[in-house]
Image (cartoon, rainbow, N blue to C red; front, top):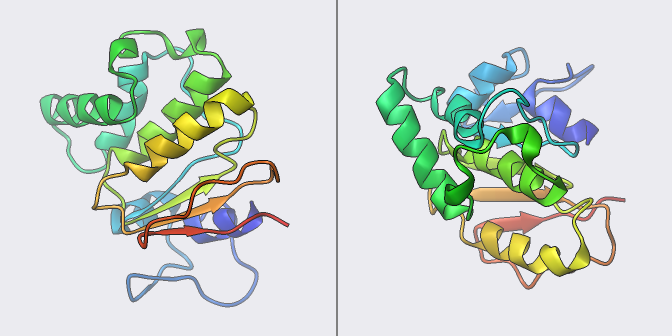
Amino acid sequence: ATSFNCLTGDLLSTSGKVMFEGQDSTKLAPEARAHLGLARTFQVPQTFEGMSVLENVMIGAFLRTSRRPEAEAKARAVLERVGMSRLADTPARALGTPGRKRLEIARPLAPEPTVLLLDASMAGLPQRQVQPAISTLRQLPHSVLTCVTVEPQPEIKPTPAPPSALSSPST
């Protein structure tokens, strides 16, 4: 979504300001915005094909630590939370669409964002896997204060969101 790209710095705003955590982040690079606590997923999963599932999530963890053991521990905890711990050593290229979508959610959770932007995180999932995916999102850590979802599939009707989640259908 264009709005997500502007918020995260993947697309430069042509007017106005992007304020986050009381700071003008309009001109900040995406990495700097991530350091502030803003994370996102992409509609088409951005997996690092030549890396394992664990290594993909460690990339997010390295935003908060430069120490490999800490990044690995954090990544393993996130994989456990999203139900992917048994796939930690699996090459990312071996995952199907549901696994790639779940990995796309896991990676931005590793740096413990305060805002998570989910861009069509259910798109491409078989209907039988939508509710389990929604359940995973409902179990996000308490550190994620706000979760914004843009979901283009009208048939996806998640159960009422807890106060910490904000759902916005795509138009």
